[in-house]
Length: 333
Image 1 (tube, rainbow, N blue to C red):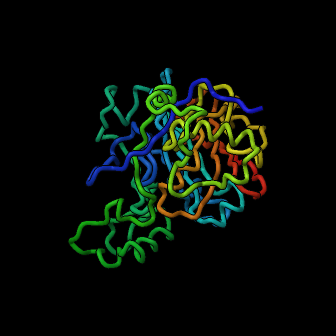
Image 2 (cartoon, one colour):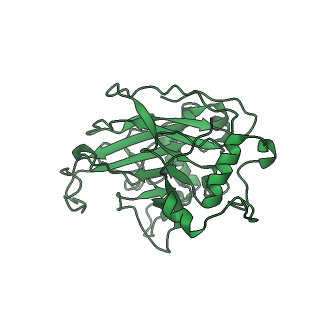
Image 3 (cartoon, rainbow, N blue to C red):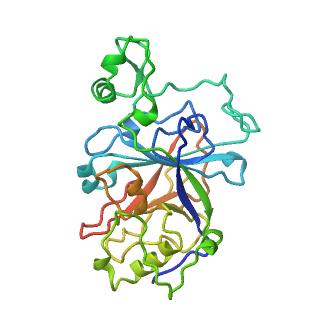
């Protein structure tokens, strides 16, 4: 049965202004660039961020700032990382990592009014990816890296071999070729946004979310799931994310083919149920700068009670639906 959510919040991307820097703004949602860590000390290790197939570090894809009405979730964020290798995406979901972190109102990193506590102990970050940087450049002893692979990347691709030990400014994040293009994400209600540009069944306007369609409509002419998906996209074609944590009806799948298994593993920390929190749409691929990776829908499930993650980034789970004849893939726990 095809179902519709009663209330959905939508995510839309806005490019950063020239010279805009949001690296010190943890209370936002964003795509690309480097992650802005909520807990700035207990960042996931490099091993936790590795792709399960190529064993290279995954890249930061997006983060959603989602505070809740409880003391231990006064600040809360969910992060998605994924491998940039197309082959790893064909292999399965081991190329994705999803983390949840949250803080109470009283914490060591931020004051009660949200200002950053500059005296709090923090973790050094990798210059290439923005993750835990435990290693130093052996020459300048100033630039940090998470692993040997990123040191080599910076040395060869980002030209650190030229700037090392020289009195020059390092690359900005926008010049760092390892990172996906950076955008802020604005969240708004579907009902409010739709009223400004409502499309009816009698409208002659054709659905065209981008110049590069993320799927082939010809394969879905009689697919009720696709027709329902298309109807939802027509209202707001530029949406890249649908936040549905308070919506009981479930994922808005793009097709009736390759729908992942409905069994979701319980939270390993509290043994509680996991529920759908948000889904990432294929439109996001058009903002990633010509990437070869692919998906139809990414559905992220998190602990239903958002159990405490003090001093820890909890691993959550993700499901993926392709929009082709590829076989359904396994669940990442």
